[in-house]
Length: 174
Ligand code: IMP
Ligand code: MG
Image (cartoon, rainbow, N blue to C red):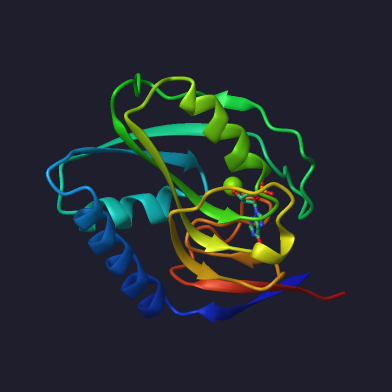
């Protein structure tokens, strides 16, 4: 069995999302944005961010395979559901829940760059820099977290805990 304890309370997560949205609003002043949500983990972060960005925003969704039901990266990445629309000529922000090894985002970034967006930036709610295998150019990052398995605010363990309104740490007990 596993238990969850609070690592980052809801108020701190929301306050940080406010700050990131303000920064994005400044950085892209006068433009409109396409936010790309990486399913399913980024859903909560993407919608909270989108509501707070004071610019015209479009949303699209992509789903890639990652960990399955394990807590260790397999390194295998494939597109389960592609974007619905073209991103050619658009200012794009790719939104991730957490960057761990960096494999998912570096793969996605290369793939999406080939579709000729006007610009492409990466935004992650959480970053585990100690686990990085592939460098990725992150422009917006919510929180750095230690090398522990975190859940909540979209992040899952075997599809559970996504709807927790805070970031929690998973502890395994027997
Ligand atoms: P990466 O390709 O190794 O950077 O893996 C990123 C993906 O792994 C994230 O989108 C998550 O789905 C998953 N992941 C990595 N660390 C955690 C964690 O601590 N909790 C939940 N999911 C995680
Ligand atoms: Mg994920």
